[in-house]
Structures are given as structure tokens and as C-alpha cells.
Length: 216
Image 1 (tube, rainbow, N blue to C red):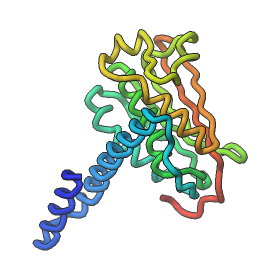
Image 2 (image 1 turned 90 degrees about the vertical axis):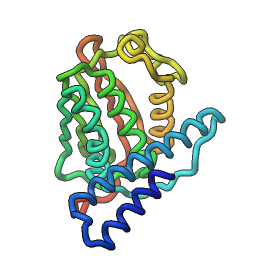
Image 3 (image 1 turned 60 degrees about the horizontal axis):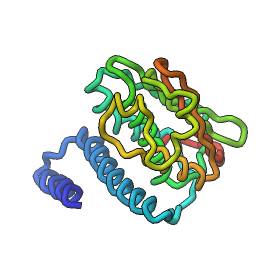
């Protein structure tokens, strides 16, 4: 909240002096997104510790805008490892029926994991497609992969794979458990295809809404 308040104060200070350049609007939006993501993660962790779920606001959302925000959020981490971050969304996507905070959390969790467990100069691709009455979102990476045995347990709370621990020392194993619960609360599905040493693809499906009238 201190960071959020100071960002607002800086904007007001510069605007009053006529020195707020247009390109700072996107930077401010990215900071706001990161702050909201941290606050949301705190609430998710607290809720998970109490076996609770927060009340959702289910609405029709323009998916491309959410995906673009999440991609921007991950660009810095990807750049540090020279990872190519690719967005491949179909141009005719309908709205998706979801809670915006939960949807952003799902995508940032999956993208964060993909970047974290992909070696330098790898590739992470986010795709979105309309398939009948659902919208399918996939986050694919060229990372360390997940064994068939571990794929049966990755959604357990506090579970981390042996390969994951070797690749990244930090982590408590709650991200995918929270993601699965959020997807379920949105009447969606999540599944993984993976091969050790080749990479992983997480596929999330959510209910499709009305036809998208304009870009987000």
C-alpha cells in the first residue's frame, strides 16, 4: 500500500507540473498490476491456510487484455534469462466468463512457473483459442519438464518435484494447488502435458461468453 500510494503521489506531482509523459501510463499500469498481484497472492495464501475461498465476481472479460498484462508482467524475469516470451492469441476470441483477479492469478502462476523452470535462452509461449463453448489457454515452455509420477502429485499442497527443487531452491509448493482450486471455482479445467528434459504445457479451459466486439 505504501508503494501504491507513492506511485499515485508521483503521478500527481508530475501531472501538476505538466511533465508526465504518455509512456509512463503503461509503466504505472504495470506497477499497479504487480502490486495488486502481490496483495492477491497474500489473500490466496491466507485463504489456503484456512481452507477457504474468497467470493468471486464472475463477469465476461476480454481475454486478450488480461493476457497482455500478464505477458508484460513476465517480460523482465524472462529477459534476465534470455527467454523468448511469445503470445499467440487467436484474433476471434470471445469474452471469457471468469473472475478477473482469479484469472490473472491463474495466468501469472503458470507463467511464473514456466519462466522459473526454463533454462536460459529457452522459450515460453502463451496461446489462447476458442473451442466451441470454451476458451482454451495454454502456457508452454521448453523447461525441465515433469515426470509422469510427479504429474500425479503436482497439485498437492506443499509438494515440489525433485527436479524442481534442484532447479530452483526457493518455493513452498502452493502455486499449482491454488491455481487448480481457482480454475475449479471458475467451472474450468486444468491439465498438463510434460516430458522430462523437453518441457511442459499447462492447458486451462474456461467457459466462453459472448462474441468479442472489440479489442481489450
